[in-house]
Structure formats: structure tokens, C-alpha cells
Image (cartoon, rainbow over the protein chains, first blue to last red):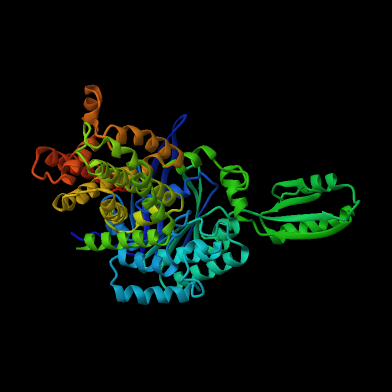
Length: 337
Length: 253
């Protein structure tokens, strides 16, 4: 009986995944029914605050953890019934990294290749290839304990793709990296995607989810609350006009309340000395703002129009900002598992 | 075949790691040598007394020291496991298709080697001090102690994965160390003690290994004590390896 189901176009398909962890105050539900359908060949992001269930989902998909209920297929293989077959098809770069610090970079790569059943000659060739691809050449002969954060992360990504997996999972891959190393890693992940690898990553960085992911799922309290391309998700919500007055200009309140009465405006608020107004139709909305400014005579320093951000999407779906969210209890239970 | 290759690869990785930290090799050797140099001389006046053959205190003492070395070489495994949980190495290895048993045996093989090499050196060093081993017995004694190392190594690794904290592991291992070693008679044979002490010793798996080791050093091979020593120690090793493998497998088959 073939292990993989024929629908190969799916990197991941999961239905109704649930997982609870024991905790001090009883059981904590980390996943409350996660459904996913992720097409192959793209970078797919899981965005959510700490404790939302991103890591738990990833650990179930990578065979590290068994779901309480629900089913999941990775690269077409049932995770519960054939974990060994799933392991052959996936690469995994955990949050903790996982490089063997007492071995050199090359030794790490060679052992990894051999454990996946690659022959000695092939392993040597592939290690050389990855040392070049991920720019490890200057230090691959030194033990990994001596590496900088960026060097170590690159080695760990190399370990994850040593055996050319169909699906690569990364848990918070840029956590703790400086901006330069981060940009570098993004480039390398895009390159891998272009070469045909499906990539799934978790992040709690808005810009990473926005710029790196082809599609993404926003996860909160163990559920997928929104799913789509970053552009689709953002287009569901109105853009925002910010009116910054000149220093000393008064009458912000009356301008705000007159905007509030305009049917072309969405929510209007005053924030940090500037007026922020949602404009569902930016063309008509901006024209209306300028009409009122001309009539009202408030001295204006700047008027700008912002695209909605993924934080706006998160705010709309969950009622709070991603920056303030986070569930320390689930996080703790997750960490102990 | 794959399993053997994986075990060999993982053992090699471990041995390289040990060779790169020669301070541990040195430490492992210094303890038994200090016992020989600073404790064994106290025993010479006991020669010919109860429990000690005339002129052969080391024949009783060296097997006990070897058991102590086996215990020490194996019990370190848990510390390494915990540091590898913290750096994500274990998680990474668990996502590879490598056999879970091979993941356990990689460490066990290394610990057996780091026991056996200094053990042979201690036997050689003890010769001029008055150790008179029967070589046939020693040829069985070292494998018996290697089994004890394997049991301690796998047991310590399983404890490490289960407890996850260095502090808890240290508390459990040091809590076990004295009762296990004292109640096996590593320093002086339990036969010197009162009946209740010997009775307690019989509840300690390590006791049987040490008793068998003393008979083997004296060249008595075919006795029930020797057979029982091998039987109990092999059973302990199998049980510990099974437990550790189960810990590695825990999340999913």
C-alpha cells in the first residue's frame, strides 16, 4: 500500500487538530481545532503572539508531538500513522537550533546526511554545496560553539536542508538575529523556495510575516483566525489617513468630530496629537479630508495615507494588538512538553 | 544494517566529543589512581584478616574500584542529555529518521569506552602495588563492568530526559550514588558487615556485579555468584536501555 496519498500538490493538510497540555490549573488548550491546507512550493507563515499555538502546530507536523485529535498529512503522508516516512520528507530547524556545539560545522552536516541514509561520497558533496550556498566556508572547520549567532543559524538551516527535504519547517528562524543576518536569511529562504522547497515558518514579527510569506495564517488562542496572502488579508481592512497638525494648532477636536460625521469616514480617533481616520474608499476619503481641511482652517504639517498593516488585521480579528497579545500560561505548558 | 551504521556514526560523534575535552579523560583516571595511591595503603595492615587473603588486599579492592569507575563513567550521561535538550540537539535528532535505539546506544558505547580504557590502565598500574589478577577472570571482569556502565549510562540518560533540569538530576544521582555504592561493598566487602547490612545489599542490583567481580579477579569463573552477577547486570542494562529508548520515542513512534 503506498504511504503517500496522490494529492502531492499539498505540502500540509491538517483537519481539526486539537492539543491540550497539563498545567498547574488543570489542562491548557493549546490548539482548539486548527485546519490548514498549504499548497507546495511557497513560503507559508504562521503569525501569532507567543503561546498562540504556532510552535505546537509545528511540533505536531514534524512528528515531535502527537495531537490529541484531528489528522495531519505532510508531503502527502499521514503524520500519525507513518511518522518515519514523514521524517524522511521534511527538514526541521527548531527554535533552539540544534547544532551539535562540540562538533565542527562540516562534521554536523556529514552526520546529518548519513543519518538520513545518504552515502559517504554524496554526503561530502552535499556538505560542500551547502557550505558554499549558506556561506559557511570561512568557519566550517571550527567547532560550532565558537560561531556567532548568525553563523550558527546558517549552519542550522543547512542541517535542515541537508537531505533535500520536500518541506522545510522553521520555528522563529530569525529570533535574535541582527537586521543584516535577518535579510540574508530571508534571501536564502526565498532562493530555496524558488528551487522548489515548500517552507513553513512561524514568526511573531509582523514585517517578517508580511514580506517573506507568500501566504500566511494568523493564529490566536489555538485557532486560525485569518488566512490568505498578506495583500489579501490587508485589503480586507480600510486604509488610514493621518493628519498631523502644525505645532500649536488648536481645534483638533472639532475637526475630528466633523470628520466623524462624514459618511465616507470609518472610525476616527486622536492619537499622539494627530487625527487618524479610516477610509474604506481612499480616493473619495482623501478628497473629503482635503475639503474639510480647506473649510476648517487647521494648520496642517502633513497628511499621509497608510495601507493597513497585519497588526490591523490581527486587531480586527482578535480585538487586541499583536504587540500586547501573548499567553504566558500556554507558553509555559508548551515549553514543558 | 542501517541501525548498526547509525549506532557507529553516533558513537563516533560522541567519542570525538570526549577526545576534544581531554580534561574529562584526565579526571576520570585521576579518581581511581588517587584511591590506589592514598586509600589502598590503609588496607595493607588488614591483609590476612577477615575478608582479605594474605598479601592480597588489592585483589579485593581493585574490583570495587572498577565498579566505582563504571558507575561514574555511566552516570555522566544524563548531564549531557540535559545540555542537549537545552541546545535543541535531541529535538533535531528526533526529527531525523535515525533509530531511537541508535540514539541511546551512541552515548552508551562512548561511556563503555571511557570506562574500559582507564579500567585497563588501572589494572596495569595496580600490578606493582600487589594486585594479583587471574587473567582469565579479568577478561570477564571488564565486560561485566562494561555492562554495569551501560546500565548506568542509559539509566542516567533516561533520568535526564525525564527530569529535564540539571538540579533535579544532580539531586537524584547523588542521592542514589552513596546507597548504591556503599550497599554493593565497593570499598570493603559487605561480608565483613552484620547480617542486616548484607540483607540490604541483596536488594541492590549493583551488589551482584561487585560480588561477581571479586570472584572473577580471584580467578573463580564458574560459580553461581558469577552467573548471577552477569544475569542481574545484563537485565539492568536491558531495562535501562529500553527505558531510555522509550524516552526518546515518547512523543511518537
